[in-house]
Length: 374
Image 1 (spheres, rainbow, N blue to C red):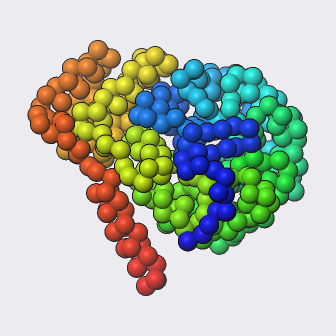
Image 2 (image 1 turned 60 degrees about the horizontal axis):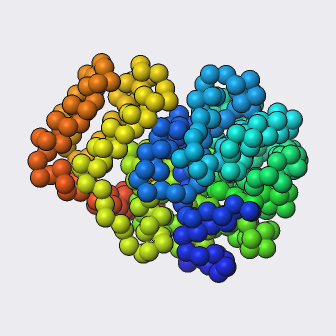
């Protein structure tokens, strides 16, 4: 177990430069998923921490093309909000950051971890790990452009190639260049999302950040946080100051609030019943209708119900009805009919965090055994 050496933070709270947060849990900028409708559902489930937009291309931000406007959409209820940029051109990044801050960004984050080809082919995302001098120089420019207004942060992977661990040195340099927080995903870019996160690697980045920042710059762990218990295990193993949750939240937007509560109080809050979880689906669809076009909203909820279903127990009738839905007005009848048919089960927890944690623990042990044998 590592100690993060940060006794001046209250449990469950986090400070990033001048930005005081009420939670040390964050919602990751998951490409294609973390739009405003989804973030509003997450916040309605009791989460009041920092959430991030989808990855933003500075060209799109400055041109204000249609897709980028959707990705940047926010509202008063969507606070605090971080906007994440990806790119390597200093002027564009600075101009886009200024634009984002003018429109409500609580922090500007630089993506240095995305392994997707369309990002890395421009030497952005995780490729920035391969050009550290240029990366640090660009980051210094960005801090100079907006760092007096909002904290500038960075999200990294451990390295680019499979066995690399270049992140500790780069993270320390970024802190000295003005980064007010570092988030580290515990895989290399080459691994993408395969295997399990390297907690020891995360711990080494945490140590480098704390040393470079004199204990005043937090380091956030990311990767494989699928239950509130995973979050506590990551903090205990690495000494990180908080956790960022990504893919696991997509079908369980209540995971953020439950995790924040667990980390602060040492126990889970009352877990959402089937009725309340299905209401999240209905609420998500309502937000989609508010902020997106009708056809997009219908198609989107048809995609999302498959992800939600992992946390709903037996729900084939609900999935089938939503898949066949052609008009928005059908949603209320579909949800009400499913809840009525569930009877007493509607007010029980269909799948608990303990049950899911047991499944994931078994998977981790099986993976570790297979790796050892190989």
